[in-house]
Image 1 (cartoon, rainbow, N blue to C red):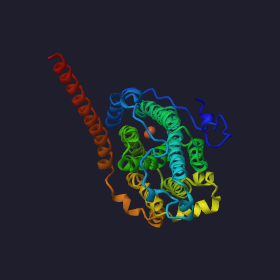
Image 2: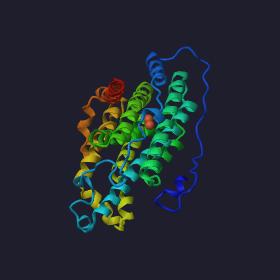
Image 3: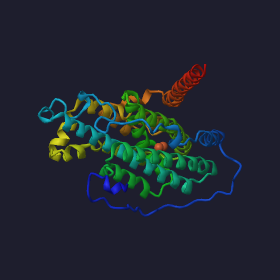
Image 4: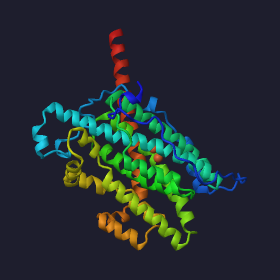
Length: 366
Ligand SMILES: [Fe+2]
Ligand SMILES: [Fe+2]
């Protein structure tokens, strides 16, 4: 079914165009790649998987409770609005929130695909082009999977959030070749990864859990790539150039923290924007969620060498400064391990069922 029939808004532009700026670059050096980057490229090739096969799409999803979200985690919980709602209304609200959240994931994945393709085009070195080509494919698979989940299991999509779109636009309009890395690989992917992780670790529903665990396995490589490429490059930049990048990060972080919280959903339930913003601001759960959203960005930014005074101050202000000390490598290896563990469990279960089937067939025969 056409996505346009499933959007919550009746009018969504069919396309969005951003004029390209900056150079396409060729390199004639094919044999001098950095070992660590080439190893990541190899891993990118080895670890491709097919969402149509690896994910069990026969699992049913209740669109009115797709993630098993507890009442207390709903923004409206404890407000007069919540008290007035019937069970049916609350189910409808859960459906909208999941649709909103996963739609932002979906649009973000498309953004990641376009940015990865841009990096193929603009990065000066062949090793980065090779690697980014695998990432482009990864992001296409992710967009396919989130799109399928929304179309088949939820039946409703939200348009891209204005502020996410603005950040994506800023990232793509910039002619400096490192900006798609910084805007997309570090900021947007960092946020997305934290959000994926929180849902992966709290949902008790098997289908979304599979989707998130497997997508995160790929994202661990993407973050590693952004870190490697930027750490090398930022060592060569002047202080003034570094400060410019830090400003971009600060602005992007505030924007995502304050403007990406599903106010659109509440508006669709007849709550005026101002009140919707206040309710989101007051929600304890959302406040915690918004802080945790930075768990992947802060250590990454610090690691690539953007750790000037102003940036540190901004993170203190947001209450996320301490996150700079978390171990990104450990988080990433856990992401990979969780996906593999999930495969093992599912495989063991299938194996058991198969053995039981064979045994009963033998018993029937006897
Ligand atoms: Fe992705
Ligand atoms: Fe990614």
